[in-house]
Image (cartoon, rainbow, N blue to C red; front, side, top):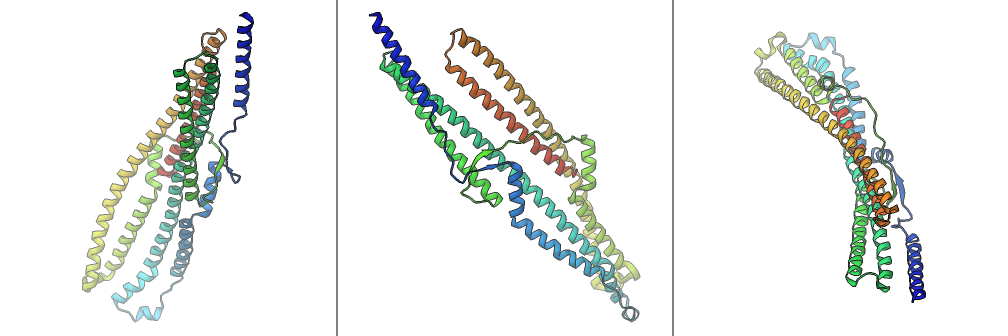
Length: 377
């Protein structure tokens, strides 16, 4: 009787060891042969080199530079000037003095739009890259859960065959295994979708997948005081600069018309003068509104950055808490109070917490970039 029990126990131990060996050789989720490594910086390089909108804006800037140079080169013919009346002289002065300023305004606006478009593309890319990073992390987590469930189920099948667990417990084990398998398939599909979305956005080959999606270290750039950010934004934001240039142009155009009282003498110029006065008043109101909106945007972005920093710190604290829990679990395993399977669960929780820190850092970096953009730093 004693020999039979020993033999049965030995058979169980050998079967479990075989199951563990089989589990260790299970393949991870395979990647295609054309899988690549990707980092955020690499994705940004691909995007900025492929984006057609940026190329079109650069072409427009090239043409506007030529228009500006042409406007600067214009000179008034002295004979034409002396033979012209007040209205004609106003038209000549517009071409000589106003047109270059208008051409410069158009050029500066196009250059500012190029930078704004670039900034918007980068912020959108960061959202898509974070989605890819999270999808890759989820795939790795689901793969580990699948392996743990598979390992547990293989052991439980051995236990059931040796009458150590009930059929209900075996069915529960099988259910957990199949659920983890389904979750792994869903995660793989989500990861493939995230790869395609990123590839489409940056202009990369749509079939490329990524075996490694690199995280991003915390950006240690200085954070300026809120008051400085607001002050700098109100000096340098393109919206205000563009409105101010437009206002100056309207005022200068009004001044040209008022020279020699042309707006009093000619009815058509009188209507133009009236329209300019209305435009000037409207632009002054727009500047006031833009000033308020920009100040609010800077404040909101600044506070969001503070929240993002707090999220990083909280994620670090959570990891420390899980590690402390892991030490306690390890002691309980040594004491035989809990099963060794708890060790795998704690390792999984630690990995998830580490991923949360990576993602919190990425979100913080994005929030910092947004602050630098909205404050025109």
